Image 1 (spheres, rainbow, N blue to C red):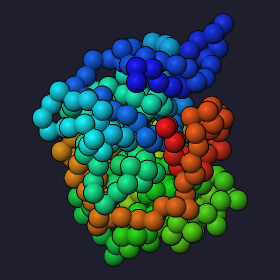
Image 2: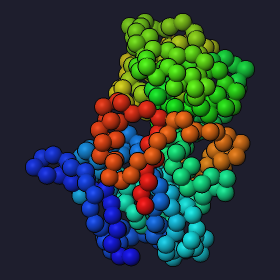
Image 3: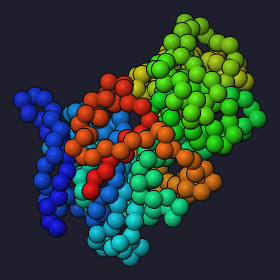
Length: 328
């Protein structure tokens, strides 16, 4: 098969359009591994790429999709053979390299991870970059000393992809979870994932002018950034940590040194894109066995043709949980 279908973003009269198109395998970039994509997932970065954000994707036409799970079609390296089921997340996939919203991708072997035996291809994309990021956040917090006995853990942006999986994983691991959201109608959804407390986003937005806030959280996973991140830092208990992995509320925030030097708190940055493959493999193994969690109530599946509507939803802040993309 030399031609395949892909969802392609291109600029027309100053506007970016996202539509199905026929592509040719020869159009794909160089790489050691050709993969037939079965499933992908929708992330906020995909929506930015699909709508012309040059900070994510430099040139168009372009096929977004920073996640892909599928079957090796051809390989020039011995460790990956045709028929192997594999996962690719992050690196340059879907940014400036044609991504998982197409039926084929061609990538460097150093980006490709064999599917953990305890996860199906579809299950791996329910998790995708969002699940990998949530797990990396928890891992980093635990490396900093966090344990379930320490007290409540706050998750901001809790109805989103990373946030909802973080709530479910933390609950599965025995943590008391407080879920923050601006979507009051989703309280039952979050409690169904294991949240014991719902915190309205407006509560975390107040008190920006204060140097410190009341100590509440043993730790936090922040998916939104902006001034909410600093308010979370100011309300950590002594010695607590916040793992920061998102920016939907902004890339800048007001700050002072007081929480760090008076309460001994930690701000931990978390990136899932450029992590070495060995680190990703370790986290995926954990997600497939020790941390395996039932996520059926936070995901829904769409086809490639249904994706443009979902892109609009995620950009408008109306996305709940995870969108799995059926590519084939």
